[in-house]
Every structure is written in C-alpha cells, then in structure tokens.
Image (cartoon, rainbow, N blue to C red; front, side, top):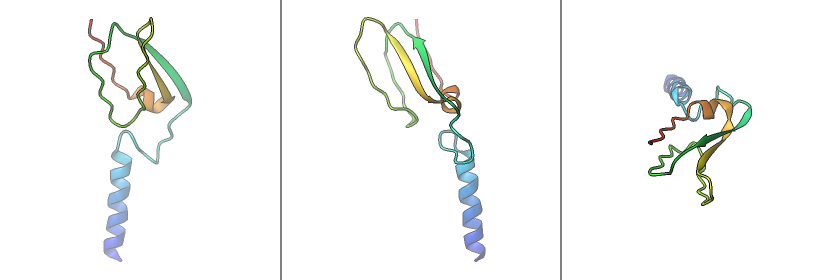
Length: 79
C-alpha cells in the first residue's frame, strides 16, 4: 500500500511539472495569435500544436489554442 501511495505522489508531481500537459492548469481562453515572418527556414514542434503549412502570398504563422499554451510558445524570426 505504501508503494501505491508513493507511485501516486510521484505521478502527480511529474504531471504538474510538465509544461505542455498539466492536468492541474486549464488551457485558458481560446485565442488566435498571428506572427508575420519573412520566410520559414525551420519548424520545431514539441507536440503542443498541430502545424499546417499553406503557400500563400503572405508569410505568417497563426497560433491557435488555449491562452496559457500560446503564451508559453517561443517564436524566433530571423531577418
């Protein structure tokens, strides 16, 4: 029984420390954030967002999701 309690405590600690999936923190209000860019040279996705590339006359990134997830996103735009 003691091992089960330790396992539950460890699992709770691990889940609460994860930045992209935390069951104790809501995603926040749904938002869309647009970031204008000069071109895409590299995309890194840490399984937080679904990426869809669309070829168009303009070049930009639209982040869609919960406010808490979007605020933790790191975007680097090289000139």
